[in-house]
Length: 273
Image (cartoon, rainbow, N blue to C red; front, side, top):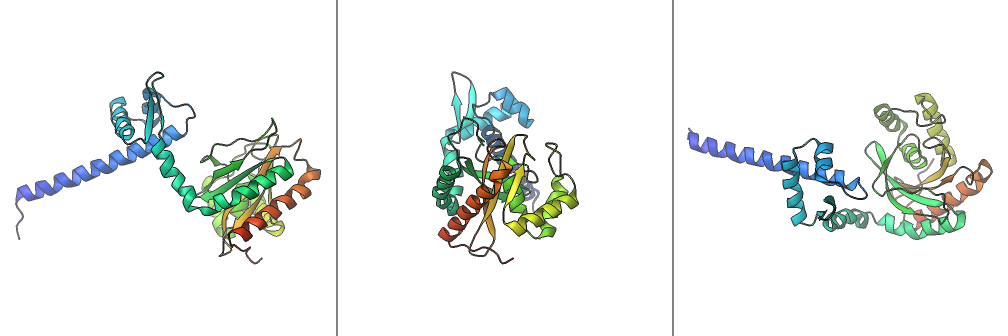
C-alpha cells in the first residue's frame, strides 16, 4: 500500500516531538542531579555552565520543574535548589529499602557503644552510595552527605561490599574504576587488592586504614538478606587518634555484633564460607 507523503510527514513529526521530549526529560534530570550536589543552591549561570546548556534552556526547564515543586527558587538570593517534591520522590527509595529503617536503631546503639559515627552504604554500579548516617557527639567526626558516593577501593564499606561479590566481578569493577592513590596508604596494586579482599572474606570485616583520607579510619561489615546476599554495609568512622590499632579488635567485634543483630531483624542470613 502506498502511504501519502502527508502521513509520512505526520509520523516523522511525532517522532521528532517524542525525541525532543526525551531530551528535555534527560536535561531536567541532569539539572536536578546538579542541584542535589549543592548545599546552598546555585544561580542560573552556575547551573548552565556546569551542565553545558544555554541559560535560556536551563531557565525554561527549571521553571517547569518549579511549577511541579521539584525545584525551589530563592528570589532574594537568585538561587535554585532541590524542591520538596524531589525529596518525597527520593525518600520513596528508602521506604522501599526497608532495611535502612530497620538498621537505624542498631546503628544508634553502635554509636552509643563505640562513641564513633556509623554509616550505611549500598553498592550501586561501580561505587558505593551512603544512604544513612548516625553521627556521634565528638567534635572531630566524619560527616557525609546522604546520596554521596565514595572511592570504593579505599573505603571500609566499599571494600566490604566488593568482598561480597565473586572475585571475578569485584576485580572487573576495579579494572573499570582503577586504583588511584588517594593517600600514601591506598592500595594501588590489583594483586595486593585481591589479597585484601581475600583477607576481608576470611575475617568478616574490613578496615580503611587512612586509605581514603589521612587521619581517618573506618571498620565495616556487611548486612545480608534472606538469600545470603549483601544488601548494604555499615561502618564506624573516626579519627585515627581514637580508632587506634589497639581498639580494632574491640571495634570490629562491636560492628560485627551489630550487623548480626540487623541480619536477624530483617530475616537475613550470612552466606556459607
